[in-house]
Image (cartoon, rainbow, N blue to C red; front, side):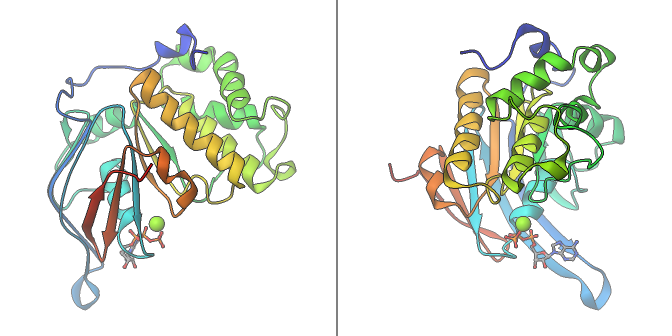
Length: 249
Ligand SMILES: Nc1ncnc2c1ncn2[C@@H]1O[C@H](COP(=O)(O)OP(=O)(O)OP(=O)(O)O)[C@@H](O)[C@H]1O
Ligand SMILES: [Mg+2]
């Protein structure tokens, strides 16, 4: 089965240069939080290139810098030092127009699903198209229900978040991240609130996107049960990448 119908594949606006050598290319990246006495380095000299279409898992203890790295690569935080190239664009010093164009091609799934409580599952998924053009927003119903079906919520389309379980809400957030047909998906513990089976379903969906659409996924997880699906597993420790390996299959 194809994941997307024609209408949504057209929503990806490819106004940015081609990214021949990997959609994420990071070199010499350092990052600090705080200022003065409280200034603390969170990332140290990160080098990382991620291949198109791959599913890369980021692991490491709490506080090791995973979310910081993800948000810098996903243009949600300003790059202070070093180079982050996303989809062929340098993010260090990039102006807001470039960042907006980049973000349009991304999907995000966060630890906290942050759904709008007053909107139904369908309407929440529609929010994923807000940064896209008017046509994508107009034709939102078919792709939104398609995605909700794919994550197993076909019978909950009109439910409000308050009437969904934690795992179901997380799956709505996954559908919202994917509805804009992103080139790169950044996911921060997307399976944390899910049972084994739905966690597996979500990660297999991301994996399938990689195969069928060449979508690249960078995902933080502590979930050992999904590691085997990764193309690559990167481990961080105290702000540094300490391991970069293939999964044991
Ligand atoms: N907004 C912030 N202000 C100050 N320090 C921060 C901020 N965000 C993160 N840090 C610090 O940077 C370091 C890395 O944090 P980060 O959130 O990237 O860790 P993480 O690996 O995602 O951890 P977790 O598994 O708990 O989510 C930590 O020492 C953290 O305290
Ligand atoms: Mg984190």
